[in-house]
Length: 174
Image (cartoon, rainbow, N blue to C red):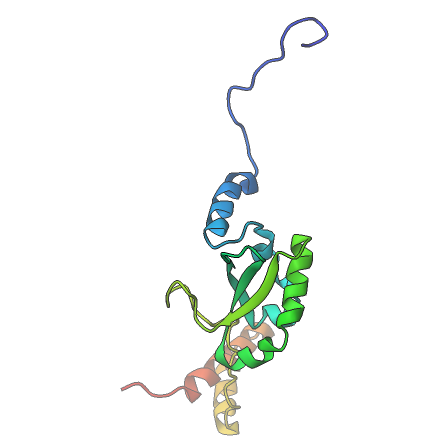
């Protein structure tokens, strides 16, 4: 009731809502289907386990055993990184349990493919570093500089020289 004795006005429309509020139920449902009761483990994985582990692994599933003595966290990694990650299982378990606030995870299991199939188990976690082209020979650089020499703007001239070098060193298409 307002001070004048009339009931407060009811909002008819929802108005603006935060995106997080709209997506929260869907994210929770998707996380719970894989055993993640707390979605924070998925969304803050790098903060929980550290950047070095997050770079080579990601959480896939939390499975609860029949005995009820804790859950098993399944972590996806690539083949070459599995031995390194194997040595850090206890560290991962401790950090994840710290996130939950109690000993929810009793074991960490490593997998090199997702348990649900190959389409979801893509193992590439980072982009491959770009490979730089070898430096062009001096004759090619000189030809590109001669072609761009009439241009008075230095930024445009440098861009045209770079383009010229790339065109002149590129492989011929047949």
